[in-house]
Amino acid sequence: MALTLCLVTIGLTAAATRGLLFALIALGAAVFLVVLGVIGRERTAMLTMMAAFATAPMYKGLAPSPSSAITPTDLLFGLSVMLLLPSLLRHKVNLPLGYVLGVSLILITGTLSTAFSPDPLVSALQFVQWLVVLVGLVTLVAIWAPKWKAVDLLVWSYVVGQMASVAYSPLDGGIADRRIGLSHHPNAFGEAGVMTFALAMYLWRRHDAVWYRVLVAGAAGAGAVSAVTSGSRAATVVIAGLVLMVPIVERSAIRGFLLAIGGAVFVFSLPLLVDSTGDTSALSRLAGSADSLVADRARLDAQDLGISLFLQHPIAGNGFADAIYVHNVVLGVLASVGVIGFLGYLMVLFVLARPLFGHHPNRRLGYVVWAFIAITPTVPGLEDRTLWVPMSLTILLAIQSRLGSTSPDTTTTESS
Image (cartoon, rainbow, N blue to C red; front, side):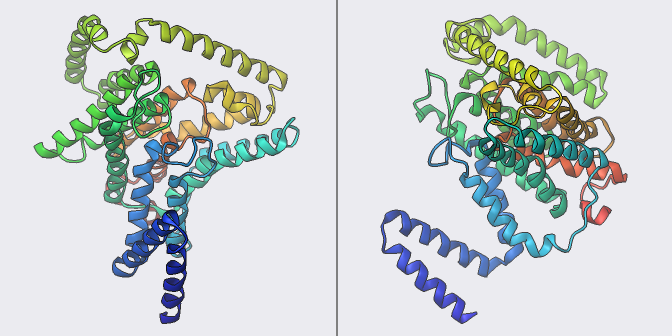
């Protein structure tokens, strides 16, 4: 052990003499080793996982380039896996059959479509990145099986990350006067706002203390601000749709009545809100600003491309080389893996979405899945970490609901 520490110290010292960047990396590594030695492997893994969730809302904005295949969020997840590996090897997991079948269909069709793709190398790289989140990240959470108190910490980490991005947004310079926060694009900022709002809907019922509810309301407000100031019409509409789901999910006529009143107030105040938010906000773009008309034309062109790709090979798909240009995850899946693979994708989403309408005490985490389903037809990027990182937690609901577990602090491993 002493020899290892000595060698590490020598290596870090040598790295620190090679410039500012290497010095910062060496300092970060040294701090990490000190934390690891003081609090232990599992607690360090939890802190690293929290950091990964906190950076997920702006993962491309923190990367050297938005086109980088590997981001700081990915590195943090990789480090978390290495720290958790001894524990993961001791755990068992029984993934829902629907999820396994769905992923199997995607693997088969994705492999075949990539093999016969006009650009198999690019297709393979895109396919692997999708599998990292669709299979790797979700399975990691399922095997790790954190208790729900740990899940709450991860959720709050994501929310705090987006709140920091919102706090920075007045200084970001924006793109065409649309805010981007710490992310790389206004739409990505809006996506993170949607997921933050959905996570706040879950957090709201975790505690009933006044101070806690104020914090959660602030998180929900940050999500809404992200959507409006980003200029993302889809994000704004999805947040409104999540609110409309409340009386159905809560099965409450009183909440439905209060919601209807709130909706009426919102409709009557909409013209004033549009006038006061500027020409590039989401509300103004919903009203039909010139900027929104240009975006609509680009989306229609991307949609035509996706339909054309799908019709070329509707059964097994064309591979993933052109999926990002479709600017619609749903159509991108259809074009990439065809009808058969798309059926598998629907099976995965069904397994993750169904628990929201069940009886698990933490079923409101399922709002995240419905937010994902609603926002993805308007965004590119099958492997979007901003969306998939919070989505990965919902596999715990799917597993516990299937096993009949209703304990809010039972892990999936213990349940199985």
